[in-house]
Structure formats: structure tokens, C-alpha cells
Length: 314
Image 1 (cartoon, rainbow, N blue to C red):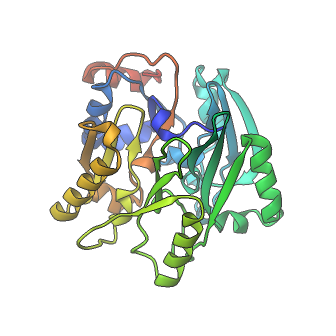
Image 2 (cartoon, rainbow, N blue to C red):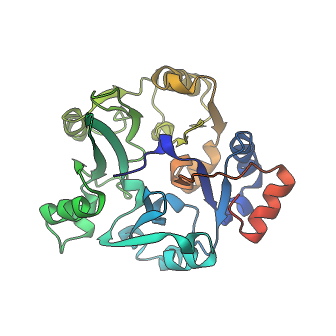
């Protein structure tokens, strides 16, 4: 079982993001708070990328925690967040049941999808690049798949090739789960134009075995156009990163509106080219999204600032 992004109600950032990017975080925060949904911050983080190190929610109060020890930070270990310290700082998170998986993996390399196979059951998918195999040489591919099945239930790993020029090897800039009709194939949105044809074709073939694949169609492709896939989604709204190109920003927003008709007028765009260029991540990377049965009401700007300072779940 897995809770997908369209079922999430709370959005959590690193407190560093609020501190270092007040204008951008305020713009995003106003959208979230307009839905009277939770907006919060976690502390003791060493960088902004809470998606990468925070646990994956599989039930109301059950989370799966992986080992956060990425190879690309081995020469800069001061940026490796101790997740246990982050969870300990908040009394709310201490109430969660945490299942530890002995695998090194970033949350940005796990895109979850789901499909109803029959009136009685669901099957989940997780899309990952094969970078995970490189970071866990002590396990075979079959052993990793068994670990996932024993933890998540009926889940299929969809393996994508890892382009070694992509240091991070994340899938959340490659593929986004759109949804699926009842008993139908899940739909995914992809951006494969930035990859060489050989790798792009391999990625497409791997995805097409399980999903209906929708290509992000742009009149031109920027080095940052992967960020369009790296959007923030909850059960109420979607926020798409803008990269400062008026034409492709508009094309992306139009395509999101067609692919996610259930969101109607609840799809937004926030310009963040400078942030993406400077830091190498966008909105999915920045956020830890969770489902809470009883979301607290949104906060005004004043209360938002107060909540961040004292570490409330807001």
C-alpha cells in the first residue's frame, strides 16, 4: 500500500528554505494556506531537500525510512541530514510508526503510482533509476524487490536506466504520476527530451510496459525544463515551477490543465528559475507531503511565521 501525492493534505518544508528564501516561500505558502491545509517546517536539516531524506508514508501513521547517505555527498558530509534528529525535534512525528529499510536511496528517486487491478485490490508501482543498485551493491536486484514487497505489499519496481551524467539519478524530474481510470492503465507525464536517444528510448520502453505515457510537449527545451515535472501536488492543488520562459511556462501549464482536469482552477505556477539554477532542485524536491485525517486550518502570514519559529505542524 502507498499513499500517492493526490491523496496528501499537508506540505512540509525545511526551515532553511523559509529562512533563506522568504519571498519565494511566502508566495508558495499563500497558495497552500488559501486551502486551509497544513503547512509546516522541519528542523535540524542540513539542506532544503526534505523529499530526499524524510520517510515515505504508507498508512495514516506508518512511515518507511530509508538510509540517507547519498554518494554525491560523500565529500560534503556536512550536508547529509540526520533524519532521526529531525524526527526527534518534533513531538508530532514521534507518534509515527517508523519502519526502517536497510537500503540507501533518495526520496527523489522514488515516484509512486497506483492502479486498481480488480474490485478487491490495488497494485502500487515505484519508478526508480538503477542508481539505487549502484548504491546498494550488497543486495541483488531481486533482493531489493523482495524488500520492497515485504514492506509495501503488492508493489512493482519499474527500473529506469541511470544516465551517469545525471549525478543525482532521481526520477522526480523524469516522470510524474497523473492518475488512472478504474481498472485502467496508470497515466504518467514524462520529460525525456534532455536525454540521449538511447537512454530516452530505454526509459520510454520501461515505462510503457506499465503506464500510458504522456510526453511533455514544448516548443523548445531548456536545460531546466526537467523542473516542470518536479511539481508540488496535494489532494487540493498543483503548483508547477516556472523557469522564466514565457512560452514554455504557458505550454506546460496548459498541458497540466488538460492532464489533470479534476483540479480545474487549482493549478498554479510559481516562478523559480533562479532558485532552481542555484540549487538544482524544484518543488517536489523541496517538499515532504503527508496525509493527515484532520488537517489544521491554514495560517495567515503572521501565524505562518510564528508556526515556523516554534516548529508547529501548521
